[in-house]
Length: 334
Image 1 (cartoon, helix red, strand yellow):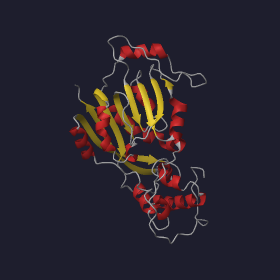
Image 2 (cartoon, one colour; image 1 turned 135 degrees about the vertical axis):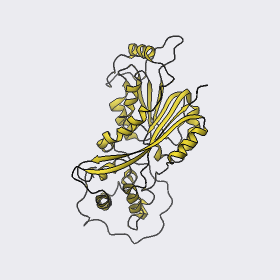
Image 3 (cartoon, helix red, strand yellow; image 1 turned 90 degrees about the horizontal axis):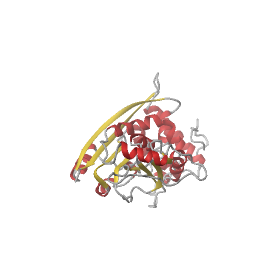
């Protein structure tokens, strides 16, 4: 089914199951991501990252001199055709630090990873993600030499098990750690992987009790869908409250700044909240139903009707409040 299609009726939907038995405990498949669907609301999705980026302090890497060296070595950003270089060329003189090294955890299609290269033009930036679809889009659109002479590449990684393979000046994550069980347990390892004065920075959605997510969880656990979708609606809710992030990161010896913001987003178009969650929270359920178009249409129709009541359109669009939690933790100089 096309990702933008929302059925107008459920007359042909399968009958409601009367089986209320507990589903078998089997590993849930990784969600199948759709980069284009995710990018439908790229402006709203990018704004929190810009707010996070503005609070990240200066990195311990070099500034203008090394950036000029790398620009001379790499020139302007190259093309990605046959024969395009696949490894960075970095020059730095004796006594100077190499360009800043940055990791973007859960980079998705790479659209916000490029903002890191704009902030630190000579940096070597690597985006990590588990989704082959997202990585393919990011590699196609963004990988290669950056205009400032830096380098941007993308690699597969499961963030639940990712550990720094070299020292990083910045480890950053935008709206990804909510998918990672026990991600706070990785903070110590990630901070140990920072250079002295380096920074760990991330933002995660904090809206899992909002109607969009609460209704999804209730629908997945309803008698009709329980056998196929139980746990898919609330599968990736692994965030802490701001105070908890503050304490954990401060306990690890970091200078820590934690805050939260609720964005009152004005969405446009037909069923815009459904269109939003199709790019994120709905991915596990859509993946589980991917082999059954009829069931997919029926499920989306039920969820659409619930969202219409929870988020009625107004004269200027549909207001969709979205809470996000931010953390910036700087490892102290040694």
